[in-house]
Image (tube, rainbow, N blue to C red; front, side, top):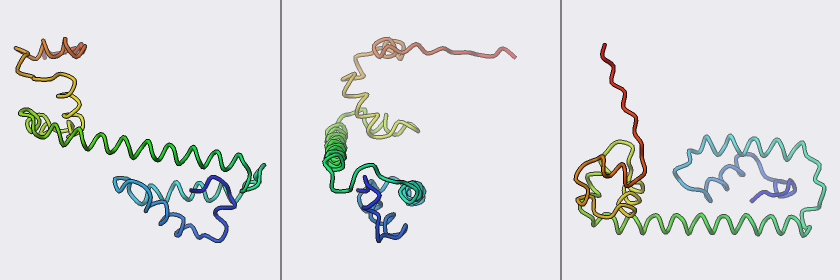
Length: 140
């Protein structure tokens, strides 16, 4: 949104923060956004741009930013579809109930491993996943 300092002319820090907040994920806390906006605001205030705001370079940067934003939207869409499919699987509810597992990680695990019932024990699952868990038990 603000790839050139001239794009901030006439905006207050609050207006900038509100605009950025409207365009990003709701999972990002507004205080974090405000902190980053303040840093960009100060950098823009103290900068002397080498190219004008209407230059080709700024247009290209803006296009790249739009492309990244579109890719992020596509990733979110695919993640949501993956979770929607995984919810219907038997083990999804159990795995996603593990603290820290979350829906996306559970869906990815089930998508990668398939039916967990084919593993007789956790050691087979670890071997399939390529995990080498070290266990340390204190004898004290």
